[in-house]
Image 1: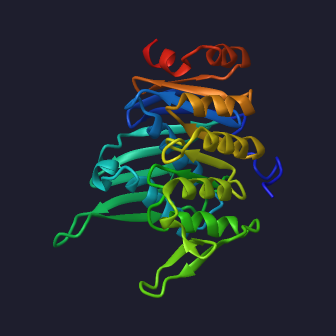
Image 2 (image 1 turned 180 degrees about the vertical axis):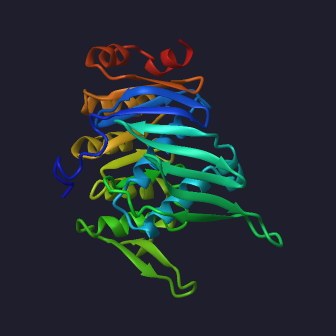
Length: 305
């Protein structure tokens, strides 16, 4: 069960504009069901994913507890919690006339939707050598939930994210062999596949399991560096098939020619979002995408054009 079109509308057919989020600019990106983001390192691909994810998360149907889990993940997925927050400038993310605003505050940020403050995010300084921690205040009472997003970052195997994704998926569909079990030694609840903790099965296996689970309930799925930890080409084809058969809206960052082609071979009507110098433009009309894919080295052409 992967949902009907009405259940999984996501962002398909909408328009996204981003202004100054981590320095990126994107004007009127036309979103299709599958959107592949390409560009050189440092061009802003991950930042664009974060911008879209924060908008959909704060307008999600999730409970505050789930929103807190995802907020913690998105800010810690860059590796340095403090810089992840303090490097954010005043910025906006707009989707079809609705706007997420981000404003810098001392030690953190304030986020609002359509003029109403919905979240304040701060970091707590480390004490006695402990790591910095996150402090979040939510006020989403007046927000009408619309989305069910999932963000599979390059740190997708970090604490509680696999368990969060699978527990939500199991409310919508039966997942054979996947269970969240209590560990005797630590008391922690961890995801298991056929009785084995997934964390010992390899990151590639875990990533494929999480993407498959996300398609059971999420209407917006964002995947950073989709080819990371996946080998070989057959894995790309399997994931492309999973994406093609889903009704979710996908945003996929890749630097792999093979992954891009595997998706294109399955889904002709995709949008290729090209990032260069922290500016984004969408290549979404079929003729332009076909011309791009007809090149021997489409990613190389985009990088150095």
